[in-house]
Amino acid sequence: MAQSAEEFLASHELITLASASTSGEPHACDLLYVSEGTTIFFALNAGSQTAKNLTENPRASVSVGDAPDEGEDWTAARGIQLTGDVVDIVDEEERLCGEKFVERYPYLSDVFEGGDFWRLDPTEVHYVHNDGDESLQALGVTWKRDTLK
Image (cartoon, rainbow, N blue to C red; front, side, top):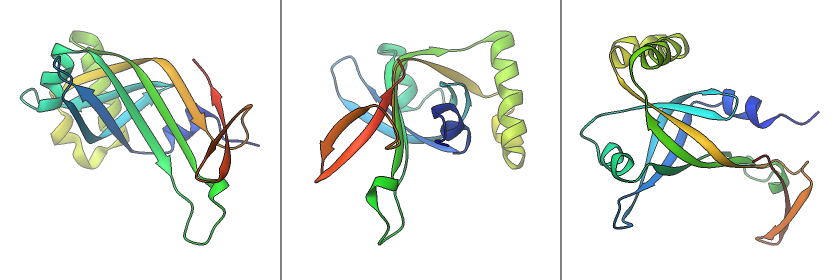
């Protein structure tokens, strides 16, 4: 049975988040995250370039992927791309989010305590897992994916 997009997200710890300034200057960074379904929660330093970009332009994309081991069939690759609106969460939602981070990453509890948490609400979700319905051609391989949103 194929792993669902939600299971794939829950089984990983690192996303690459791409944001852009209002002038269109791109910026990408890797972040630890917590997911609920396909909604992504992450923490940022308030003074970071990513936080500045998301304050100015609250639209972003994230990706998570797995490549097969060397010599394995590339059709075993898996990946998910999500694009959506980002919100700097506050108050009770932020406190609850901090608890989720401490639960998932207890060895980093001091890092996440009182952190600045954000939420990406996806408007597009593409899950490449080669069991999907939609076919794409790239690198001489036919890839299959599901578009969930």
